[in-house]
View 1 (cartoon, rainbow, N blue to C red):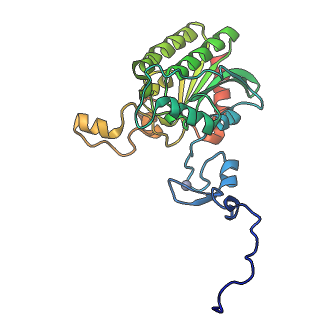
View 2 (view 1 turned 135 degrees about the vertical axis):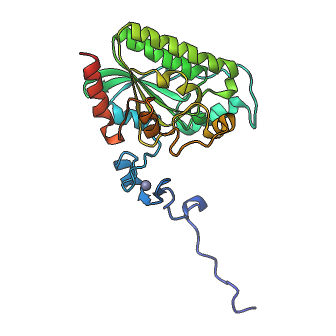
Length: 282
Ligand SMILES: [Zn+2]
């Protein structure tokens, strides 16, 4: 018998294989902008803003509502979900894509409608969930935002929308595009009712969402460095056959060119919106 053969039984493994790894994964995050490695807890405590370069990381819908609203809020239309009207299939069936996103994120579509208070003032706020099929707007998002606006009218509260979206949802074709008209019409009624609408555009806000409610605010506020546009830069360059300037389609560029009213750092957002509502409602 070879001397190196193990004669005794190996030490019994009591921990299951999936728990044997040291859990450091996900504790640290690298900043997309400056490359600094940030401790996740520090990043969360800093409202998901890089402490070194002030790069604004994406926030999900619930984090966004926690940032803007005081404590508890009531969710509306949470059960609404897509019926997959076109029975659409690309690399996988749309119905499966929806189910997977619902399971992963715990929301039924790409927007949460919340009724709560912002610095003590009652508001209706729709916050988009980018993780849900790129925050795309299909029939459910369009309908929920419309109902959110209608709720604001019924209860005489200001309306706030936080956009974070790749645009219309391709898997619902024309039905997605019809949402642009529907939401815009509802906002016109909100305007007739003399209620303010504040639009917050976060990274990224593009396509059909930019082309409808995101740009229709009484105040359009962007987060620093957010990509905001309709078509992507490559498509525009090919169409106009010109090189685009530096910083094109970023919040600061849009502010300089009159497409936004303000670019506000995340830590100042809540107070800024509260101040704006004070002005608009007096
Ligand atoms: Zn950074």
